[in-house]
Amino acid sequence: MAKRIEASNVSSYYGSFKAIDGISMTVEPKTITALIGPSGCGKSTFLRSINRMHEVLPGARIEGRLTIDDQNIYDSDVDVTAVRRMIGMVFQRPNPFPTMSIYENVVAGLKLNGVKKKSLLDDAAERSLKAANLWDEVKDRLNRPGAGLSGGQQQRLCIARTIAVEPQVVLMDEPCSALDPISTLAIEDLMFKLKDRFTIIIVTHNMQQAARVSDRTGFFSIDKTGEPGRLIEYDDTQKIFSNPTEKKTEDYITGRFG
Amino acid sequence: MGDDPSRSADANAGGPVVTTSHSRAAGGGVPPTPLDGPPLGGGGGLPRKARFSMETGFRGLSTAAGAMVLVIIIAIAIFLVSKAVPALNANTENFLSYKTWFPNDAEPKFGIAALAFGTVLTSVIALLVAVPIALGIALFLSHYAPKRLATPLGFVIDLLAAVPSVVFGLWGRDVFLNPVRDFSVWLNTYFGWVPIFGGDGPFGRSILLGSLVLAIMVLPIVTSLSREVFQQTPAMNEEAALALGATKWEMIRTTVLPYGKPGVIAAVMLGLGRALGETIALALTLGTVFEISFNVIENGGNSIAANIANTFGEANATGRGALIASGLVLFAITLVVNMAARAIIYRRREFRDSAA
Image 1 (spheres, each protein chain N blue to C red):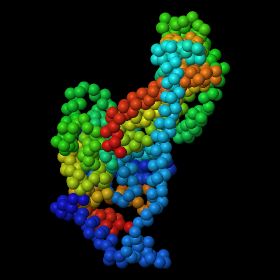
Image 2: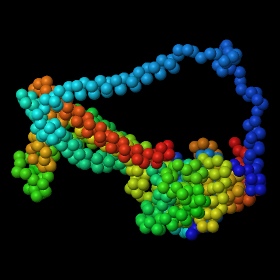
Image 3: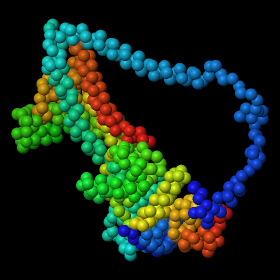
Image 4: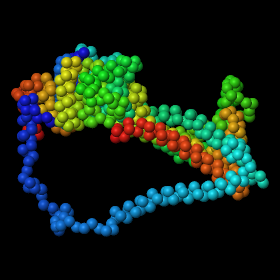
């Protein structure tokens, strides 16, 4: 249920602007990897390169090699929709489909993939909502609008929607930055639980969060605006936050960053 | 966030260090105001509020503007009804079911049935033709065309909406008539067994011609408004669909179309409003026949607005009253259609309000 992601020398561009330069890292199955770093350093760009959401923007492209269990994600004969089903994504702001009910939101991905049988959809909806720790809060109002939930519930709904299609890897792009501390904790607890089944990569601005949830941490940084972001250090979370090798990493995690 | 010391022991250095560097003595860092005189925030006591201010004036003006709409509508309604009632009283036939129009005779005989039927039929056919094409164009412009192409193309479509209807009418009567007639003959030859394509001719100045001209006139309105609402689909919802493994068309189906549906309905209603009320283009293209027939290719057809344009010139007092009565029926039709559309939009309103 979980696969290894390997990036070697990945650079991503927006038109002629190089956003990240030569990122190489390996993400092991069933681990949580946190990507930290200042704004604009390319964490999100790298994350979006992994499930080929980067190329949705006009002019965006990547160089280098990204593989999932040794299969090249960017091979010319790879179906991009299959990549995105295999590598799900949770976004910074909760984005349930506004015209759909809670139930419809959860099964949206399954319906897109041709699952029509009501019993299968019902099962998947219940299973995913339970996995997302949301079932007890919404089981009596599955037909209410998904956008009517609180921010934290919406984000868990989006996580349920993502894991309903049974991906191998779940990417999370600052999933808690729009949430209050209690909802954040709920999502973090959820991440521990999901680790048993999925490979999780999370971008976060919250260093305590990175320290709390992740097994491995990657620190991204840029020299100055306009320069591409680079992976400065990538190691066990414990090591990054207690005894980082790089001076830049230490400066950043202790708040002495530029 | 959730400073659980046991779990964030390694990272707590980030918190206190940063906050102390930002703390400052109360007011110490704020420079004094550079303005002469008392500070803008007010130095002394609280001043009294002005009794008559711009605020009161603007509120009065906007209230008056709002009230004026009501006054105008009521005045128009009173005028129309007062003109229509005497003519309706003089009518020797049933206004709702009688089909022809002789209001100027000594014994006025007139009815709305054929006119109302023609109005609705031409508009419905026009929408059936125009809406699918308009939605296709709108989606192409909003989601498929490269920006370099979409911008000028959208501009051309908007330009089409600005062409006066009399131009469309003349073009329909003198130019478009020929291909439509040929097409009608072809339809009649091969599909004559279908009642709507039956008859022995002559063909051409028919419901089909009027409807197609109307469709062309409605097209830019529906396209333009639909494109606007499609473009407003939140990017984060489109991305959510793509990230679930949707193809572009699936993404459009799951996010763009449902999100745009109320807007599209509104656009179609505006188009229908234009089609129902269209006067001169139909007066020039329809066959001016007072009959209720579903045959769309034979010379024939008429509409309320076209009839007003065609017969107002030679109408006497009763004739004018009769035409005004027909105008009231047209108004009623538009009203019913609009209310039906609103009912559709409001039905799933909670799904939209909560999305905001």
